[in-house]
Length: 245
Ligand SMILES: NC(=O)c1ccc[n+]([C@@H]2O[C@H](COP(=O)([O-])OP(=O)(O)OC[C@H]3O[C@@H](n4cnc5c(N)ncnc54)[C@H](OP(=O)(O)O)[C@@H]3O)[C@@H](O)[C@H]2O)c1
Image (cartoon, rainbow, N blue to C red):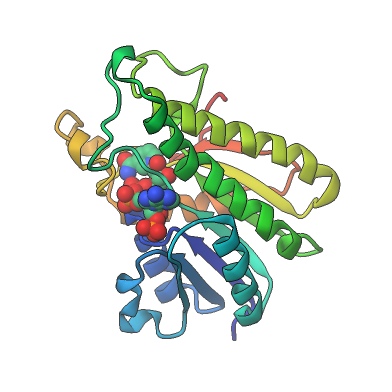
C-alpha cells in the first residue's frame, strides 16, 4: 500500500538514478515519480510501478504542463522532492581557471540550468505541496556555491550559479515559513561523486574521497529523514554537516 509519493526531477543524473533504485526497491510504501529529458534508464523492470515523465526541455511552460500530469497520477501526498539539475561542463563549456576565461554566454547557460530551472520547479510545485502533510524539497547544490567557504577561486560560472541557487532557496524559505509551513527546503552538497559531471576532474581526488552514487543516495536519504520541518533552509553536506552559506 503506497502512502506517500517521492518526486525526482532531473532523474537521469547519476546520483538521482541511484536514489531512484533505492526508493523503488526498498520503499514499498512510496510511489515514485520521475521526470527527465532522457528516461531510458527507467525502462527497467524495477520501475514498472513508477510513473515516468519525459520532457523535451525545462522551459516554464513544459514544467507547468508536466506538473499538471504529476498531479493527475499522484495517488498520495508528495513527501519528498529531489531537484537534481546541475551542469559543470558541456562540449562547449569548461569551468574557468582564470578571469580571462569568463564569458557572459557560459554564465547565462549555467545560471539557467543550475539556478533558474530548479526555482521554476519550486514555483510551480509549491501550490501542490503546501498543506498539512510534511514535505521536504532537496536541491542538489555544491559546497563551491558557499561564498564564505570560497578559498580557491576559479570555476566562476558554476560557483556563481550554485551561490545563486542557494540565495533563491534561502529567500523562498523565508516566504514559505509564513505561507507553507509544512515545506522544508534543503540545499545538498553530495561531495565528489563518480558521475559524468565529475569525470574530467577525478584525477586528483583521493580514492576514499570519490563517492559512489549509491553511497551518496544512502547518505541523502538519512539526511532527509533526520531533517526537521523548521521553517528554515538548510545547506548541508553528505555527512549531514551544515555548510556556511
Ligand atoms: N558529481 C559530483 O561530484 C557533484 C559534486 C557536487 C555537486 N554535485 C551536484 O549534484 C547534482 C547531480 O549531479 P550528478 O553528478 O548526478 O550529475 P550528472 O549525472 O551529470 O546529471 C546532470 C543533471 O543535470 C541535468 N541537466 C543537464 N543539462 C541540463 C540543462 N541544460 N538544463 C537543466 N538540467 C540539465 C540532468 O537532467 P536530465 O535528467 O534531464 O538529464 C541531470 O539531472 C548537480 O546539481 C551537481 O551540480 C555533483
